[in-house]
Image 1 (cartoon, rainbow, N blue to C red):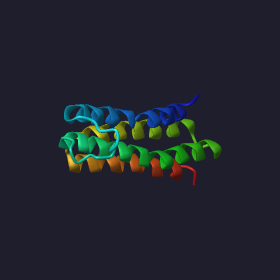
Image 2 (image 1 turned 120 degrees about the vertical axis):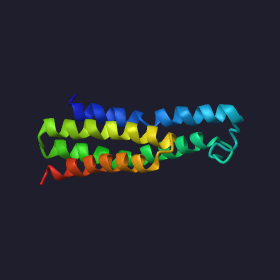
Image 3 (image 1 turned 135 degrees about the vertical axis):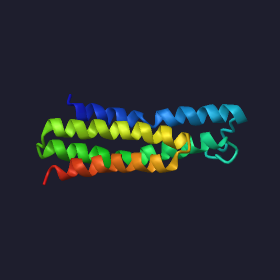
Length: 125
């Protein structure tokens, strides 16, 4: 399996990281399973973790498509792997920065990840 395919696997698991942080916040305030999306009672850091989790899921389709298109069109595997790995790093930093409420740096990390997706597609032209 190529590096970029391993990165797809890791990207699918990445939402578990902010989910665990959100869960810690829920344990602090008490969890009501009847209202699993009631984030208002969570501490601010846990609310941001919930938003980071949602954003991690939102980033998946474009990344997965970009990796698959790159493989189908036989793009350079080394470039594809590097772009995929940088995407994973950017997404990890995005989550950390989101939880720490460092909005400007978080946005920069988001743009790096999005740039990697564009780069994955762009290398096929």
